[in-house]
Amino acid sequence: MSSLLNSIDLQYVIGALVKIAIFWIFIMLVVAYTVYAERRVLAVIQNRLGPNRVGWQGLLQPFADLLKFIFKEDIIPLAVNKWLYILAPIIVLIPAMMVLIVYPFGPEVPLPFGDVISQTINDLTAKIGLNWNVDLRTINLYVTNMNVGLLYVFALTSLGIYGIVVGGWASNSKYSLLGGLRSSAQMISYELALSLSVVAVLIQAGTLDLTKIVAQQSGWFGMKWNIFQPPLFLPCIIAFTIYLISAIAETNRVPFDLPEAETELVAGFHTEYSSLKFALFFMAEYVNMMTVSVLATTLFLGGWNGPGVEQFPWLGVFWFLAKVFFFLFLYIWLRGTLPRFRYDQLMNFGWKVLLPAALFNIVLASVIGVLFL
Amino acid sequence: MKEYIPVLIVFIFVAGFAVTNIVLSHLVGKRKDTRAKLMPYECGMDPVGSAHQRFSVKFYLIAMLFILFDIEAIFLLPWAVVFKTLSQTISKPFVFFEMMIFVAVLLVGYIYVWKKGLFEWNRN
Image 1 (cartoon, one colour):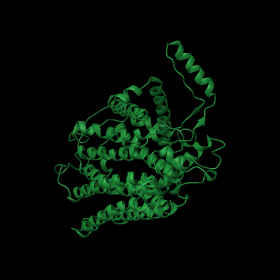
Image 2 (cartoon, chains in turn green, purple):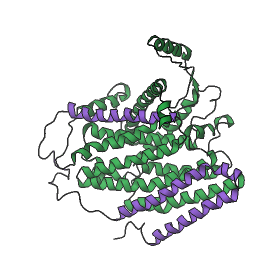
Image 3 (cartoon, chains in turn orange, blue):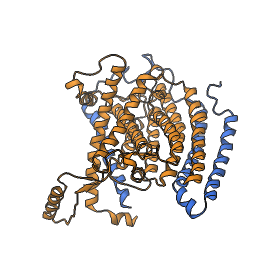
Image 4 (tube, helix red, strand yellow):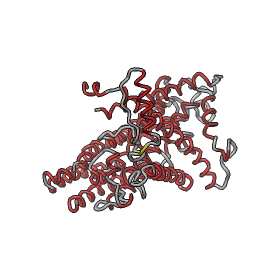
C-alpha cells in the first residue's frame, strides 16, 4: 500500500486522466455511431431507408436521440425497490466502461508537434512552481499496461451481470424478473466457454498483458496474427470460433437475445426503465460489444498489427479500428439475418457443445504445445 | 504498482458520468404521474400478483456449476501463461500431465452432472 501511495505523482495522474477522457469521448462516439450504423444497415437489409433526416444522411441522429433521452419523463413505478432500481443502471455501466484503460489502440506513435506541446506544458507548469518534465514526442496509445490486463477485462465484464439481475428483480415486474434471470443464466453459461477459449492464445503468448500479447504477434509484414502463427494456429482458430460465438451470447445479441426477446418478454430486464436510465443500459450493451470486439482483435487478429505498421506507426490505429469495426458490423449483419434461439436450445448449445469444445481445445493446444514449443 | 492507479481514476470518472446521468434525467424530464403509468407493465391489464415469486431451481444449480467451472478457468489461465517457461525450466511432461489430470477430474464431474440430467432444459 505504501509503495502505491509513494508512486502517485501528479504528472502521471493528470496524464492518465487526459488519456482516459480522450478515449472515453472516442468510445462514446463509436457507441453513438454504432447505433446509427445499426439502424441504417438493418434498414438496407430490410429494404427500407432508415433514419436519414437529421443532418446529412441522418448523421446527427445520435445527438437528436441523446437530447430526446434527456428530456423524456423519468418514471419510477410505485412497486419498485427504489434504491436498487436506481442503482442497477449504474452498476451495469461502470464496469463496462472501466475496461477502456487497457484497450491497446496502437503502437508507440510520434505525436505531431510533440516537442512544441511538451515544451509549452513544461514552461507553463514551471511558472506555477511545478517541476514537470513532460515528454510527448512519442506517446503510447493505451492508458495503462497492467500485467493482468486480460483478467481485469474478464473480471469487470462479469460484474455487469449483477446490475442486470438487480435491475430485473428491483423492477418488480414479471417481464423484468424473467429477463434478468435468463440474462444471468445465459451470461454465466457462455462466460465459461469464453474464458476457457483464450487458454490456447495464452499458451502461445505467455502473458496476460494485452499490449504484450499484441507485440508478440508483430512480424511477417504485420500478418503474424495468432490465428496464422505456428505452431498453435489450429487451436487458435478453434478458440477464435468459440470465442466469437460466446462473445455474441455474452452481450445478449441476436441470435442469443433471449433476455430481451421482445415478442415474449417486452424488453426483458429493462422493461420498466425510461429516459437516461434506459440509455445507460443501452450504452453499456454497446460498450460491451466494443469490448469483446477489441478483445477478439487483440487476442486473435493481431491487434494493431498489419502491413506497413513498422514504417508508419499511426497506420496501426487504422488496422486496429478496421478490425474492431468489422466485428461491430458482423453483429449488425447477424441481427439482420438470423432468427432467435429457443431457451433450451441456447442452454444446450452452451453447456453441451461449446464447453466440451473449449475443454477439448485446451487439451489439443497443450499437446501441440508440448510437442512443438 | 503505478499502472494500477488509472483503475481508480477511471472508476471515479465513469461513476461520476453515470451518477450525473441519473441526476440529470431526474431534474430535466417533466413529470406527470398517473396511476396506470406507475403500475408494473403487464400488457395493459392490472398486474396479477407480485413479481417476486419463486422461480425454477435450475437457475440456482447452473449458478453453482458456473462457480465450479469458473474456478477451473482461474487455475487454467495462470497455467497457460507459464506453460512455456515452466516446460523449459522444469520438464514438459510434468507441466502437461499436471493439468491433464486436473482436466480429467473435472471431466468426470461434468459427465456426472450431464447424466444426472442437469442440462435437460425442456424436461417437465
